[in-house]
Amino acid sequence: MKNKKILVVEDEQDIADLLLLHLADLSDDVELAADGHAGLRLATSRHWDLIVLDLRLPGPDGLEICRAVRLKDTYTPILMLTSKSSELDRVLGLELGADDYMTKPFSVLELMARVRAIFRQVEAIENESRFSTDRIRIGPLLINSAARVVKKGDDQVDLTAREFDLLLHFATHPGRVFRRSELLDRVWGHGHEGYEHTVNSHINRLRSKIEDNPADPACIVTVWGVGYKLDDSGMRESTR
Ligand code: CA
Image (cartoon, rainbow, N blue to C red; front, side, top):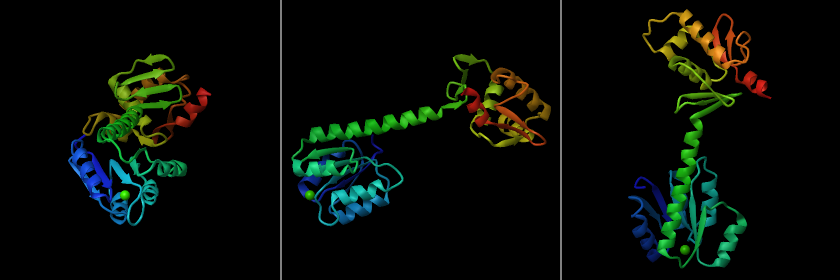
């Protein structure tokens, strides 16, 4: 967790000191903004893995900063600090989407546990999205690029390494037409002493394994006079 960038926006010096002291255990990249102006500027101008944000601040308050952070393209977790539970009601009522809230006075141990929980949650989401890009679905085909496994429905499709690379190349560029020479370059590699009929024969073998009707392919289609492309729309329709 040492690479996490944390911004603390807190005007009360003793609380700020306490936060900086303990957050240093989680990250060596913790910055303090001591009022709303600095808070708003820092919060919106840089990437943060977490903003610990006091609600009541001189200058723009925590709600204003929260609102500005939520307008950014990238998602920034926010842990909001409020002085009274009546303020917490206000924060919750506005549904500004702070990730967590704590009411002062808070226990430092509790705060650290919440911060760790936010980081774990973010990491879990990131891992999940990384995992899902490993899996590409085209109609009835499910390609797991990490495991190099292709399934058609419930059945595993037995592909050679080259056939798999070829399918994966099409799957990651849906709709794009590739000339045979381009496929030789990209799938077989630069300098490959291949012939374009090598591409044709691999495409035909791949089709015989993945297409419902290899004579009338719906997935990897021939673009006459040019080459081949993956027609994912046809495959999707064929599964309906
Ligand atoms: Ca304050």
